[in-house]
Amino acid sequence: MLLSWTSSQVRAAEEPLLAAGVPLMDRAAFGLATHVAALLRERLGRVGGARVAVLVGPGNNGGDALLAGALLARRGAAVRALTVDDRVHAAGAAALRAAGGRVVPADEGLAWAVDADLVLDGLLGIGASGGLRGAAADLVERLSADVRGVVVAVDAPSGIGVDDGSLPGPVLAADETVTFGAAKPGLLLPPAAGAVGRLAVVDIGLAPGGAPAVARLDDADVAGLWPVPPTDAHKYTRGVLGVVAGARRYPGAAVLSTTAAVLAGVGMVRYLGDVGDLVVARRPEVVIGVGRVQAWVFGPGVSPDDASQRRRIEHALEGVHERGEPAVCDAGALELLPARVGPHVVLTPHAGELARLLATRGEQVDRDVVEAEPLRWARRAHELTGATVLLKGAVTIVVGAQGAVYSQADAPSWLATAGAGDVLAGLLGALLAGRADDIHEDPSLAAALAAAAALVHGRAAHRANPGGPVAARAVAVALPETIAALLAGA
Image (cartoon, rainbow, N blue to C red; front, side, top):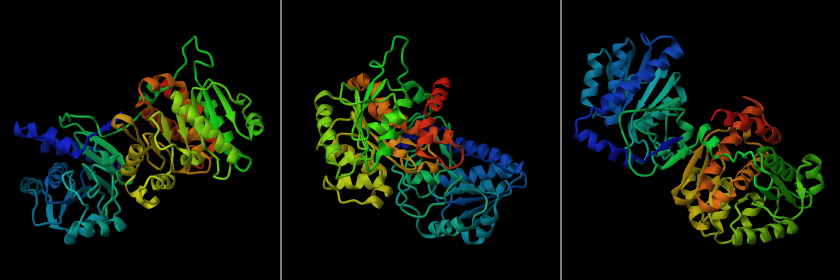
């Protein structure tokens, strides 16, 4: 699991070490230079002779970058540091000059940076806020259009919202980000996560205190969460999932969500709706009609004018409230949500749906506003409804009970396709049904299971057609092999 801590938590962890004379900047610079040298060898086959541009701001982030540049210059790289302020880290600049590098104003070094093999972005660190301004913003805007080499961000891409993932101004998108001591939330959160590239964490001896701000599950975490049946299991102990989805106008949603649930390994699927004949024709394992269930999926393919399906959802939601059955509320079920529910109910909106849900609760936001600050609005939806919120997107955000926040970036862009959300709903429903008893004891578990479903969904898309177009049905079909591979690697 990748954990992240806020800038204030990281600074608090640094203070006693700095007071004790621990050379944190030297450690950071060494780790950065080591990573960059490996990257240059990977890309060019050498460090000596590589052209490196260092973008330098006035603070300690610029100092880290300058000292790393000095270490690279000593290994034969041609290094020029571009400054955007009269203030510059004096010791770092002196070290770079002593190693044979140059320190020049940004305008003088722009052409060098455009043609460099590698650009180190050390303009702003985690102590800055409000984005890039002035000469730094101008430099980034000019480089963003023309830079040819690999871009490596120092600690974080300069100008991102380090704690919230916002993009308040121009940012030079990185191919790689080398962060120090611990990951920061903004590196995992959209929209800034799209500017981070590959993330590396350099250990400099920090031990941040308090609860992590944002977590990202990995394969081993998902394997530990998965409801693997014991030897004495039967279909009822493995979980029974009720699905209210689809209609004559949208039968595919019912087929896809039930198919995903079956192939994710739930003990039984019960389908309630008007297209049971089509569901059974494609998934004969599905049972049609009412009966005892451990969890629910509501809403895929249910339109506002579908009175019969809406009544079924409203009736089942009463049971969710009275008996605490976990549930996935997707698409057409979101507008049927009661005023308050518990975290055992997982909402799965995209940004537009979340904006509409928030609007019904007095928040005047639209899709663009949600996409600009997805964590803020997912949290607000959790506060207003009590539900666990899974906000779908290129990076999926999950907000749940006890301050749980997850950020998953496991899916290829090809997964942005019709029916993918129906597959996710069925997959997540299977997980909730398989661990329903555990969720009753610990409602915060719903958030971890939602994050696990997002990871598996993305992995299945990769497996279905690596590197190319993928259809929702193919993602569902890939679930058994995907899950088996995750469990085998545990």
